[in-house]
Amino acid sequence: MSKKEIKLLDEQVNHLFLPFVRRPSRYIGGEINQIKKDFTKCDLTIALCFPDIYEIGMSHTGLTIIYDILNSLEDVAAERVFAPWIDAEKILRDKNIPLFSLESKASLKSFDVIGFSLTNELCYTNMLNVLDLAGLEVRSSRRNENDPLIVAGGGMANCCEPIAEFVDLFLIGEGEEAVVELAELIKSEKQVGTSKKEILIKAAKKFEWAYVPSLYEFEYDNEKIKGFTPLVPDLPIKFKNAVVRDFENAPVPLKPIVPFAEAVHERVSVEIMRGCPRQCLFCQVSFCRRPVRRRSVEKITEIAKACYHATGFDTIGLLSLSTADYPELEELITKLNEYFRDKHVGLSVPSLRVGRQLKLLPEMVTSVRKSGITIAVEAASERLREIINKPLKDEDLFAAAEAAYEAGWQRLKLYFMAGLPGETEEDIKNIVELSFQLANLRKKVDGKTGQINVTISWLVPKPHTPFGWLAQKPKAYFEQAKQLILNEKRRLSARSVQFKFHNIECSTLESAIGRGDRRLSDVIENAWRGGAKFDLWDECFDPAIWREAFGKFGMDIDTAAQKQFDTGEILPWEHLGGPDKEYLLKKCKPSDKTPA
Image 1 (cartoon, rainbow, N blue to C red):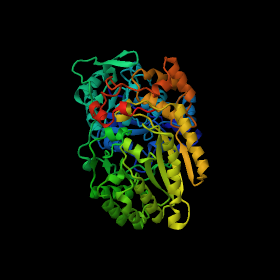
Image 2: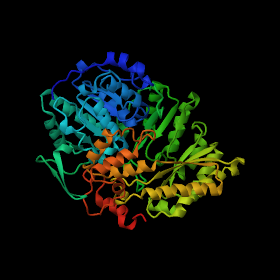
Image 3: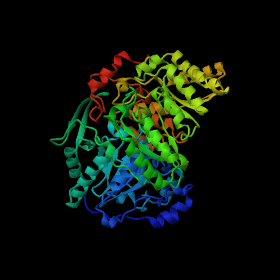
Image 4: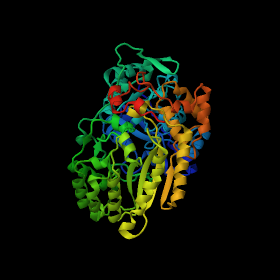
């Protein structure tokens, strides 16, 4: 890699682009607390991309952390870029304007590195669209020596084979320390003129979390993987997640950017705990982000205060996979209340688990906005909850709801999942019955009926989980489950219970892609070229495009989604961090929990 000249596009952006887009606030940059460096004084330039719109990306804590860490390095400049919405993309293409960063309006193609944060399988087409809008070939094999290195991280790095043909290097695991190590390596090798390929080989040999797909090949036996082989001597064939051991002192942005366009979660977000002691058997994150680590009450309070004074946000969000499992939650809430109560700043405490935190509800009344409280119930029967390792008792659930009503909450938001192993029609109908009972429970408090909003998702078996071997239920099963729920709602006249259902076709695609191997790169590229993008958005998602793309390569999307893996076969993700197979199989033997 040689030193590159950054191409600035201010004139084109300001005169040919911004006046014509519907929401220019998504693309102008210049927000309070943004970091803009002099490129001429930096040895390495990095464009950090979240492959969704600005409002979504600006709510992503991981991107905020990496942005702050890289810019804390004196000779590194990191700038942001988000996927442009449909109207903006048309203008870029019609006027031949390359995609640009927010801070300096710099052409993406002129950066040394483009780094993607990948959080869901359905953002892959957006990643390809961003590369194309930057003027780059989407396949790594077609890019040249002067093109940026394409790096990707986030949760999808742990099951990245379906997009292996598009990315130069995957950073597997937690990024706080790993991005610094990778940046230092690229910077030092760039200064002595090392080629991109040699940099990738050195990274692959030096870091156990660095996976370079082009340095490996697979051998297949029809649908199954027969072998996984390195193409360069002395390369590992098993990778480990990067882990931040000292989570207490891990870097945190104390001056987060204040968005111009209202973000989905516009608040001070403080991660209080990483990892989850629960390990529900369907949850990939809980198995891939281990061990459990916590920040002290003092550190969390200090971070919250600093971020509040730097932003003026009126909500403090306490983030973790299971906030209620934070051991000092009561003490933490008390301390935050003491400081923020008179400032009219509320606390957002997601994932409240029924049980031990019931006594906290009265204390939180003065600070938590009581528009609604969220409980992830997942299954309507205690039997099913035991199967998925979520031992929640109905009596505790009812006690939690009653305590919430008494504390002033008027609405409950519940999450359920359908398609679980061992599930029956009665289990599905009981989702309505249980929700209706919780609505009527409010009558004991004030004589009124509670408002219950229920979100139903469809089980997607995830890599690196005990359910990863299982077949997803067929589309017809989910359609029947949806109808059963709506029929039961009518039978009970449960007008106080409102249901929202995830898109079944989206969940099918998520299962088909999420557990796929490298051969799916052809399907994903073909779907993108056929018009697929913003697949997480109902108004943009077109299942017909995907079905045609799968068919073009002799595959069927439903067959892929419903694939059941043998316990002895090589899994497309088993080399990519996560727990050992033996550990997962002990948690849940697929043969014992095969869906009916």
